[in-house]
Length: 453
Image 1 (tube, rainbow, N blue to C red):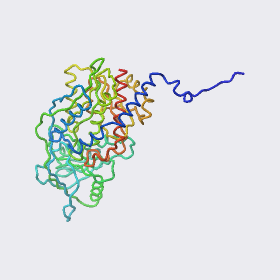
Image 2 (cartoon, helix red, strand yellow):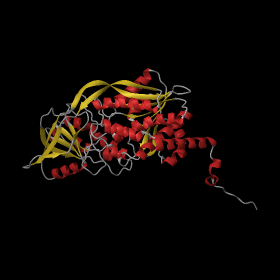
Image 3 (tube, rainbow, N blue to C red):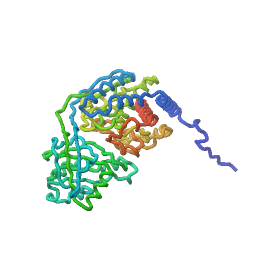
Image 4 (tube, rainbow, N blue to C red):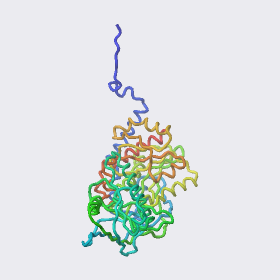
């Protein structure tokens, strides 16, 4: 009688692992060991955040960061480093205040921030009674006479039920982008929104807003969750008046730069891009958003040079200008690439924080997606398992529109929207190992793309 013998592949271990996969696994380990032991990204992030600080487009600090990034790319071993000209919008915040009072009460100051690109009150007090809505649908049903000369409080809370916090952020983002123009259409004086925040605190979160064409530009401000809850409670029982005084507004565009460094390909000069955005909002230090993406991208070049990896294609690190309030750097990069007839094979952006990497979102055709997903076992030892996303960063979107496969690093998302676009986005909120693991995974991916595409 014959016996059936079952042998587990796990029992056989490495004997049945293809030689190519073994080679890649060894290279992955070399990359990880080098970056975790010798990576400079954490100290470079300290320099960027502590010596320069927040870096709003058009500011003196941003221009300092341009020179800083160019030097760091040279130090990393880039063969070529250059500044790419780009015209950027200039928005300034200035002094601002928001007060409320109830009938017969005295004025109380609220913690607030004007939304980015908002016009202000030209230093004059603008006041009116507050009306509250909980959703855009509720606002749409309000007749214009109910809104005229009022202040509209859009009190839409961040959806805590979504495990993927970026889903909640996208849902809430409609309020930040549209509140001012929606209020203006019905004759309101200014808009207040609840911050796009996952935290149970009173930290206001700024961020970009937009004006519709041919609609009067009125101010839009944001308040933290605690203040929003308190204001909601007051409005249930009594009239509340708000008074805003702000000096923010758009200035003329100015010439600025994205910063680019590359290691020339040994086989051809087809381009693989890894990048982040160099600008930040004018609060906090821009550590997670997006100093982390900048230093991670520079680390990719440094690691290729340090390990002597002979890249087939040109690997280019791009520190994009003006992602926060215009995306002009990404758009100019795409235009220049098209005008110069450059062939881009792939582009990945890191713009979701410096937390532990958990995945890579892939915006590309199924053949390319499935090829990258076939490498999942190489990434699993580094905690990276999620390849299901189908989106990529805003700076590489122009490349995607040109047919280039694009991607975004997906870090652990649970803490990001506690501090996103706030004064709390500081160097101290970034963990060294988590940051460097992000660099590791990006370098490993670029190694595989360069080898196989």
